[in-house]
Amino acid sequence: MFTFQQRQLAWVFLKIFLRDRQSIFFSLFFPMIFIFALGLINDSDPDPFGLGIVDNAHSELAVEFIDALASRSIFDVSVGEEESLRSRLIEGDISLVLVLPEGFREASEGTELQVLVDASKVRQQGIIMPILKTVLVDIERKLRHSKAMFSIVVNDVQARSQRYMDFLLPGILAFTLMQICIAGSGFNVVEYRRKGILKRLFVTPIQPRDFISAIVVARLMLCLTQLTTLLVVAVFFMDAVVVGSLLSLYSVILLGAVVFLCLGFSLGSIAKTQQSVQAIGNIVIFPQMFLSGIFYPIELLPEVIQPVASVLPLSFVASALREISINGLGLGEIIPDLIGIGVWIVLGFFIATRYFVWREVAN
Picture 1: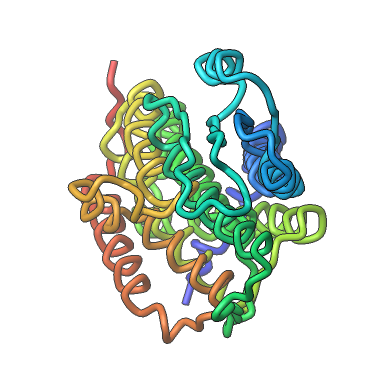
Picture 2: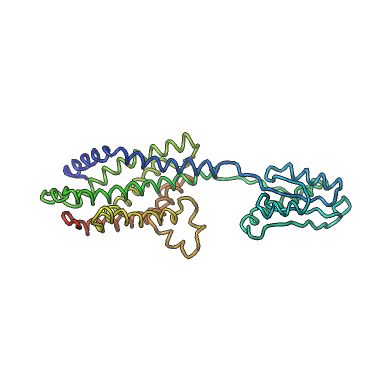
């Protein structure tokens, strides 16, 4: 239980934090920009691929074939001369060119269709070619009036959304939590030490654990308010879906806040000036921003980096929030993530209390 001193200090720190309205505003403003910008970009309908067609056959079948391709929304079909379409392909106006040979007629069998591509766009080819092959098989079946042997119906047994917004939200919540806690707690420790506030507290019965516990409680209350605002905006204005229990979600948020507050205090205990704590904070925050699966899964990173990325504190928090939010798991089903969070809490608290100093200030 918290002592009277800790409760009083927590209330004082909370009032101090609430006075910094500019910091509160920007800590909410930038995550909301991320959510709106990335959510709108990735949830919008993809632009069709530019497909040029050279009709050397000039047959009835060729006309039907071109019409069938043009009816597919995935392609933006342009019919023209080969030389003109080659130029457009090189300039990047279209993605590929399909050449229909002179022998492309009803009675033809095994006609070879030539596809012109830009070899420098390897990734784009990997996306377009499987789609084109599937569409061509479907069109051939319709033109020959033949039925498919089977069809595939996909049923999602978990009935959960696959929108990018739903993937993004837990990661943004975790990143915002880290940014608020580390930047706030680490900077506060250095600032209070520089102003002599810690020096005055040193002569009181207050222990380092009392000071740290009080700031943790005050920051927790502020973080919960800010993240709740962010969550409400995402759910009601961006149609984000949270499948799992809100109680489990907020439990992980509380644990994550403790992790990052302890890490922030560790940085504040090690750093002696405002400049150094900002530099060290950036070293801690920015690599995790790109390695912890905030914007894309860790599995997409190079294999040599994945083991390191998976044990970062932000990775554990983001993974736990995502499992609850997207997959609907309970706390008992994310034990590995909770263990990782617990290890980082112990490590951060040990460093913060072990190297905490009241009066030392670098000149």
